[in-house]
Image (tube, rainbow, N blue to C red; front, side, top):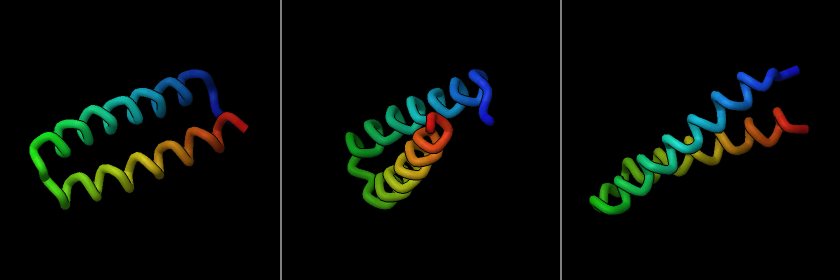
Length: 52
């Protein structure tokens, strides 16, 4: 079972990925945007599993 610290860490990673994604989109870095979107999807999936 995940602890609150684990939840907080994953939430922080999600926030950091979202910020990086916004910057990548702003600079029109297509490959980086694709990679960050995939990482964000994976992090959100993990976070969702941790909550259930």
